[in-house]
Image (cartoon, rainbow, N blue to C red; front, side):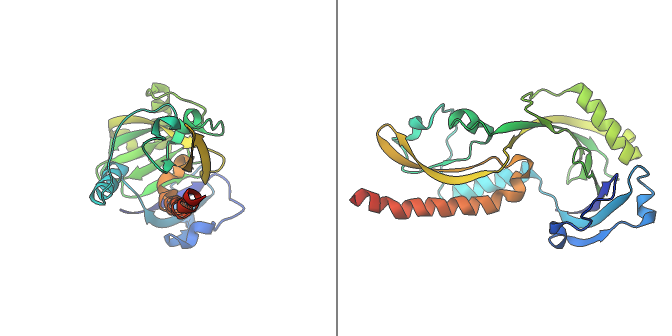
Amino acid sequence: MLSSGWQIFKEVPANKKPFWSESVIGFRFMTDRELKRFPDHKFGQAFTTIKCECSSYLPWLEKRFRRAGGLVEQRKISSLEELSNSYDIIVNCSGLGAKALVGDDKVYPVRGQVLKVEAPWLQHFIRDSDGKTYIYPGIHSVTVGGTRQEDDWRLQVDEGDTESILMRGGRLEPSLSKAKVLSKWVGLRPSRRNPRVERELVELQGRRVPVVHNYGHGGWGVTLAWGTGLDALGLVRQCLHEMPLQAKL
C-alpha cells in the first residue's frame, strides 16, 4: 500500500536529503507550519512510500513458491549434515538460527516490540529519526512502536515496553490515547554488521556440498529481500554450472 507521512528530527541532520530521497514519491522538507505539530523536533522530511503488510505478503510469496513447484517441509535441524544426503545445494536462510547452525558468532538479535491499535482516523505515518518511535497506519490497524534492544532474546511481551511505546507515541500523536490496543507483538530481528550473502563448499559426510548463505538482514529484510534473493540465485546458478566440471574431475 502507498503510505504518506513524516520523518522528524530533534536536531537538523548533516544530510538533509538522503540517498533514498529519489526512490520515494514527492520527497520534500517539512514546512515550519507542519513542524509546529511536533514542538520537540527541529526538522522533518515528508514523502510517500510503500508499506508492506507481511501478514498478507509472506503467505502470498509462499503460494507463488508452491505454484512454481516448490515443496515446503517443516522440521528442525541441528546441523547441515542432516541435509547432506538429500540435497545437492543448500541455501541457508536461517536468520538467527545461523548462530548455532553454521557457528556464525556475528549474528545477534535486536528485539522489537510493537502494538497494533484501532485508530482509523490516523492516515499518515510518523517516524522519529532515531527509529525507536513510530506510528504506521496499515490496512486493518495502526502499528505503534517500538524497541531496538540488542542481544535481547526475550520473546515475551514486556509491559514496561508497552507503557513506554504508548507514552512516546502519544507525544507524537496525542489522539492515540483514544485508540484501543488490539494486540502486542514481539519479534527478533536477525542482525549482523553486514548481511551474509556468499557461497562456500562445506565438507559434509565425505561430500563437498555447495552452501549459499543469505541471512543477517536485521530490520531491513523486506527492503533487501528481492536484491539479496537475486544475488543468492546467481550464486546457486554458479554452483550448478560448476558441478558438472567437478564431477568430471
